[in-house]
Length: 215
Image (tube, rainbow, N blue to C red; front, side, top):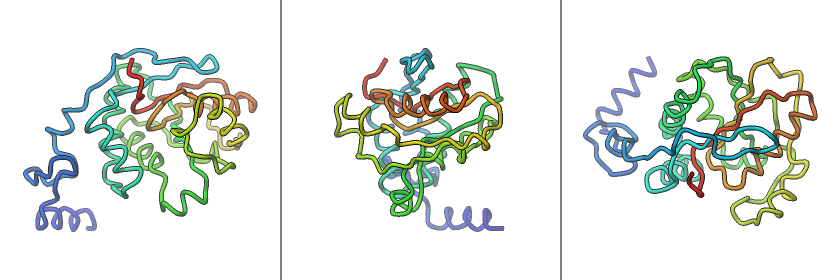
């Protein structure tokens, strides 16, 4: 019932594309703007603590705006498009559906202020698209870290030290797929991997929507 009402309202008010302003398709991201996002080559982008990190797309134009709109401007509907973009890349890596998807957590105070964790929204959509299992309880952020983009490599490592805690009881025994929006140096993934390994969890893959450093 609610879904039908939303569709009716979208039709009445002609939802516009967040990127080009077109109301032709009455969606938040039209097919033209979606198709303008470019994928990186399908290969391992880097290694952290012996674990593979994949990055899906080229960090420019629409992908940048997609992430910023979702993360900072309350454009929650964009989570579907980022998840779809990531899922379409990831299906080229493996046919395995037995993943436990773990979105990178944010500090509770920050999440309360923002009213949502954008990667939780992306993870929910990603799991629907890939038939994976969502696990938001396995890892929590217990340290209110500074924004990583302002920091150098060594400062990032220090900033993230002891930032996460693992609830091993929440582990379902599947391959862990940690997902994030941007992978710059890989330090966030690295710290999460270390914490998981301390708790005897070692079957891990990391996956980001993009990286500023390309391939």
